Image (cartoon, rainbow, N blue to C red; front, side, top):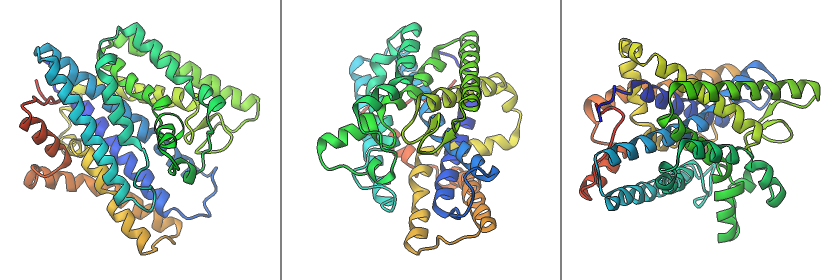
Length: 360
């Protein structure tokens, strides 16, 4: 299976994890007196709103890409099943590690984005066997699940509600329906990644055009009906906690456009020397996600939370982009030490071939 080097995927992974670091840092140290409708607040919210959807979509793309290569190489069903189970277990353990590191934000048992990816991985085998038409239908159904959830479950966007449970049943509710990143509807982004992997450019453009149309209609409706267009929580057409239908549609469309544009210029990206170093960030996306919470936890423990706007902006930018040179240093002198390498080592010990978007 000969494939061109997928440099644009590493670029997208780098962007996604930097977005994650930025939004978590700004949430930790942002001054409380910044108006929510200010340009800076809107910019930060926009970046934060795209970080997780991009992260999950890339995971869906990568999982489908790996399954395609494994099936092409005629790996046994048993080998593929072991690969899925190991990835599931590894991501669940990583979620626990995140919760322990970021104890100032999460409870140790809180379902989060890594547990979401873990359960999506379990679903990847049946999803990968579906036709493109069925995948699009499932994606469409997932987009409207917020409407169904709101009629059945308590959809409180309060952080303490999202991260707390009182019983195993509540834990599963947070995981599947009303937590920080519940499977319904967040699996829509994972399915979108699989659709992007297997679809032709013409279909992607059609889906992108439909998404742009629906997103514009949402903006027009918010203006006409005088409803707030976007907010992290509370009443708006686009909300992150819990994820609304409008948010899923708009974020999916934006992520899809990222893929379309960068894939289109993938060959030209290879000619940009500075991008080779930038993509090293994407190669460490899981490791950075886990590790970046450590300094944020220290800042919280030391009560270093009173910053003015200038200080907050400078610190956020420095802490976000410091991962670029650190990733290059890691690649040159410590590439064997990462959570990504650990996963490859575990797979190798089980005689399960790994796959990579950098193989050709």
